Image 1 (tube, one colour):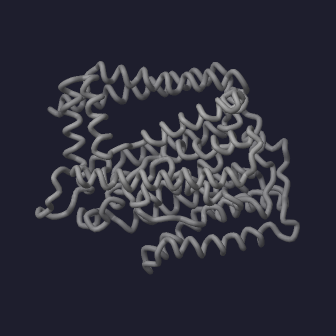
Image 2 (cartoon, one colour):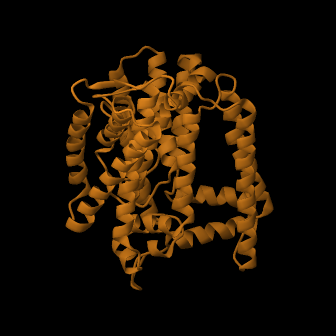
Image 3 (cartoon, helix red, strand yellow):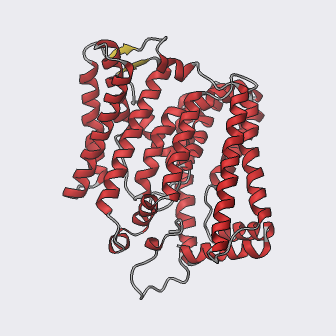
Length: 429
């Protein structure tokens, strides 16, 4: 499997016959970019595609096709108002999906995120409304519950070797029961509409000028970080991308962020709840790609035995991932309850669990472990919610949505399997 450049991801032992590791492939691409600039960057990208390293390309193409198709059937689909609603619909389940991406990177699964998210919503509502706790304390209690659930899963997995499928399947049932017990006989609790958490989820949007300022700051930070990294590589005698490549990437990011911000501002703008989701994605992507912990996650997902022999604290990494997954599930459940202004027996139920898992897989996280990024959750949930929104505008039954989403999920797994085989045959696994 091709993973970020980390020695721990390469096969352990000198007798491996792999023709080219992912590290060697990355170095080859870097030299091509260094030698030919923008043309080299295009050639390197095309080489990766030809050898099966598709990255996020299939899901991006799929998302564009979905948007074009629904726009042709109903032009209101791409209206600013509908896209603002779509972004808000993505936030809760998308946040849960970030945790699923993390466990998939290790080659594991969590089937209980729906029930855990419902439990978090129940604790928030009961603590804040029934018990009269300050909202901050109710939120803290919900987050602590998520951490404890993750610790329980991690200890069962690392100490007793119980498969994550079995642990989380039991958790799905057990925490659903605990959710119903916490809610009590009423089964439904309304959260005051004037509370800041409901206002945050439903009514708070960035002012137009602030959204543009944030775009400029993010692009400036990316440009500065890229320039500093390139200079450090030059000083160390390593290959570094040409200035033209850095400028092109920076301008591309400016367009990718600036155009959507401008378009959403034609309606209500960028919702703070969606901005929080994006922040989670960016922060987790930073930790996965820029820290020793993140490199360890990819290494374990690629080859757990090689990672162990390389000195990585495998059990600690597993424990941290399970804790993060359950914590993100609780945060997603809290956001969903805030958007609904209520917590009830259906919180975290229905298709929440399946959509969170499907979003991670559709977005590019591999079921085989070791491949995917935090942005997989963003891309995947955009696909799922786009399908849901488009079919709603067409007044089609929800049964059609389930069938289409299932087909897209199956297609994503097939693409992942085929590209994985291609990477192995070309020696870039």
